[in-house]
Image 1 (tube, rainbow, N blue to C red):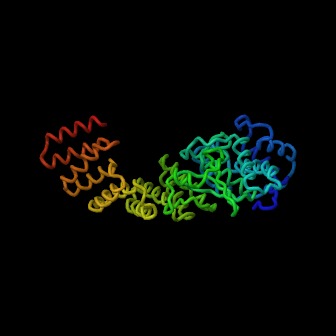
Image 2 (image 1 turned 90 degrees about the horizontal axis):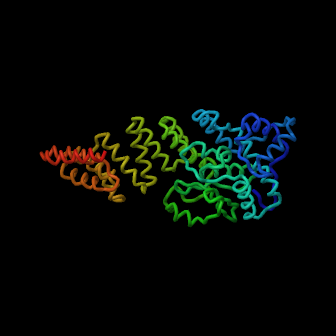
Image 3 (image 1 turned 90 degrees about the vertical axis):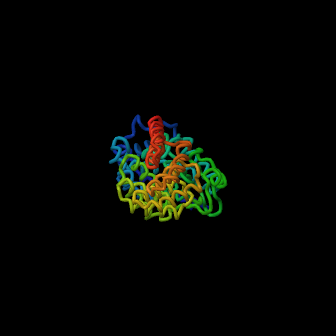
Length: 397
């Protein structure tokens, strides 16, 4: 760690890396972001020109870069080689920024100064902004985020963490409920680096309030190990693949994430959704129930679990699950409809009618509640009401 003295990481051994990465893999040209003089890209070009004949092998990647390599390769297969630059380019970019930063950090031991220089190099001179979400693979790949000048909080955090590993900086990833940031923590001083705020230092108390972080949640704002960072990356990638209909691939990513972080409740939910779509109801139910034991505050879990009990024709259990969910979200149209459906399947038409009326009146309700109300009325001999509800269902479509 940088304490009392600084150990420079870099030397002229980068040449082969730069020549291979920048010329062949990265294809530096007009598409690369244009930054000011002395930027990491300018520096990389100067080093390349000066030492292009050097045959020294490149230094090995850091742990995070090694872990990202197969994810980048798969993203290239998914999106195409022309959309995502190869992992060698990610290494080149991280190395070039780290090299530039290392010269600035020489003999610097003050944590606040170290973080300030890191912010200046990445956010000010690198020109990267956090204004995109995790719904696109390119937004969470650090080299693609830097290349476009835009990325998600996770993508920029991965860039910071990779640079930190190269320079032996005590940087750690931190989860704050669907948000990700970086923390400098040398055991004596902690400085948060929020990529959504251009690296601004926000106190932990701000995250606890903003993202409803509690002592009982799995995201307790603790420092993550690299394997846990990668678990979050894989979970995020899985969600993207699921959105593109690649459910089997998404499930594989989630399973891999659980190997790194078994207590990650959201991964179990993601697996539950994927296996439900794949028609593996029992497996889906098992994962959702596990997610509920780890994170019972997720209001949508009861809706998923209730639906699965209905699919298994375990209607009595579905009633219990929906009722439990309504304790936390009493006006949820999804839970109210599900409870009405479960009562209907049990031939309890009185309770079914009450819940479906509530579902139809709730904000965000859909036509399904009216359709089922029509069936309830048919079963109770109220054909005139049934016709009225069918008409309402058509008007809501």
